[in-house]
Amino acid sequence: MIKSHGLNHILNSEGNMETTTKNTILLNPLENPESKATIDAILEKYQEVPGSTMVILNELQNKIGFVSEDLQQYVADYLHIPVSKVHGVISFYSFFTTKPRGKHTIKVCLGTACYVGGAPQLIEKIRQLIGIGPGETNDDWTVTVEECRCVGACSQAPVVVIDDEIHGRVKPSTIAKLLRSVTTEPKA
Ligand code: FES
Image 1 (cartoon, rainbow, N blue to C red):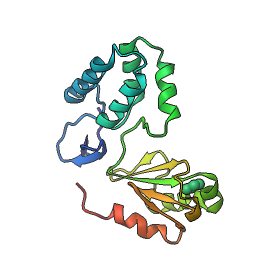
Image 2: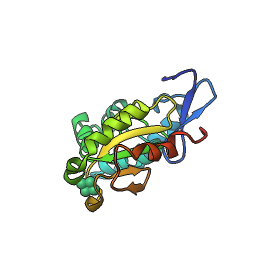
Image 3: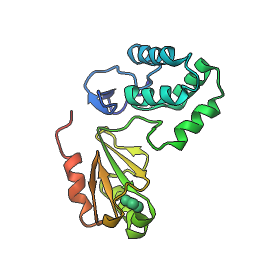
């Protein structure tokens, strides 16, 4: 069970975290009966299908919102395959996450054009402004910061993707305005 600042969090329909005022919501999906039932249903559905590991992990990411180390082990045990095989898939595809995300996701592109164009400085500025860097989520679960690979908008480098919206030619001096749109709205 994970609690934070007296608040607890649940996954919304998009697999993102929402803060609730309830006192006991589990973040470990294997300890949450509802999530566990969802996980088992996915595994049961595909367990006899050859080569279904990727499909299973994909559904878990979509339905649960992340595939934690514990969940990877659970999948490996269920399918009788080495956990290294599951871990290999998770770490190869950037689509997968091993931790729950905040309500909004800020991705900084670290492809070559964006890196050269100033992406590291943007990451530094984000850290200054909201106190978190890549792979981290803020305390009230509103924002997760991530790095990503080229999103195909190199001509607008450096690029920041907020939720699914691409923002080009972002500068350390202009990123505060972008962040404000996801950090000052009323919390869910
Ligand atoms: S390198 Fe960032 S969009 Fe291509």
